[in-house]
Length: 319
Image (cartoon, rainbow, N blue to C red; front, side, top):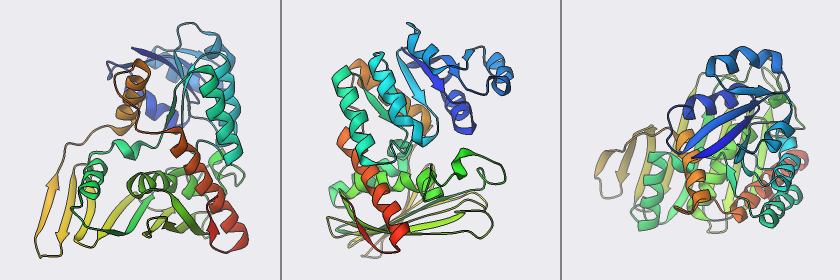
C-alpha cells in the first residue's frame, strides 16, 4: 500500500481524494495539506483524514511514502526537490514545470534521491486512448497524418484562482487541459518539433486558446480549450487507412478507407485512480510507469515553445 499526502485541496485535489480514498487497494491517502486550512477543515473531517497547513509536516511524517502535488505550477519544482531531500516519492499534477531548466532540476533531484516521479497526464490511462495507441502501433490506421484534441469546460471560470494567473498558465487552458494532448499525442507519435499558439480574451482573460503542432514524424495536430463553455471533449485521429474518433469514455467510432465502419467498445476506467495505481505499481516494482522522465521534460519543452509563440506570434521550434 502506497501511503500518500495530498498537497492542495482545491477542485482537483479533492478529485484525487474522491477517486482514491476507500476505492483503491494500492493507494491510501493518510494526510491532507492546504495553506487555507480553515476552508479545508470540514472536508478533512468528513473524510476522516489528518489536515495540516504546512507542506513540511507531510515531508516529516514517517507514515507518508509519497506526496501528491496539486499546487500552483510555479511551486512544483521546489516542492519536488524538497520531497526528494526527504526521501518521498512525488506525483505532480501537470504541467510538470514551467521551463525545461526546472524540469531537469526536478528529474536530477529525483534521480539522486532514488525516488519515483509521477505525472497527472491521466489520458494515457483512458481505455479509448489506450486502444487508439494500439491501433497506431499495429498500423490499423496506416500512416498517421493528423491528430485533433479539445477539452473544454467552464469549471474554472467565474472565480478568482491562481489558474487564471498568466504567470502560472501563459496559455490559459492549454496549460490546464490542452497539455493533456501535448503529452498524449507525443506518446502516440514521438517528439513534437514545432508549435504555433494563440489565445483570446473574449469573456475573461485567456478564455480561448488553440495551437498547431508539427511532429518529427511529419504528422500535424491541433489542440484547443475554451474555459467558458459547456463541458465538451473531442479527439480525432486521421490515418492513411482511416480515422478514429473518441465518442465517450468507453467507445470509439472508426471509419476505414475501404468503406467499413464500426463503433468499438472498451471498458471505461477511473483514469485518476488508474494513474495513481500505476505510480504505486512502479514504486513497488510490479511494472514500469507509463511515463519516462525524458517525456516529462519534453512536455515542458513544448509548453516553453508555446509560450514563446504567444509572445512572438510566430511558429516556434521545440528545443
